[in-house]
Length: 83
Image (tube, rainbow, N blue to C red):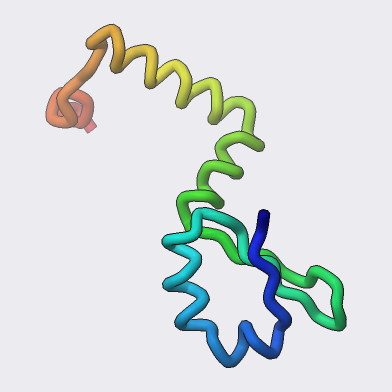
């Protein structure tokens, strides 16, 4: 379950909430007048959501993981040699 905090509390305890967010592995919902107004999450969670929302990028990540499993890897020197 998400952790829910009123805006006034979030404003006065922002630093503490950011530290807590990293350890609780949940979203932090900030309310204004009793309604959800914003959501805080870790950068990793945001990146995961963005990748999942982008089907082309998601397919690329899946292909890359399969390449790693098969040992189909390239050194960065080889990739950027002619750039």
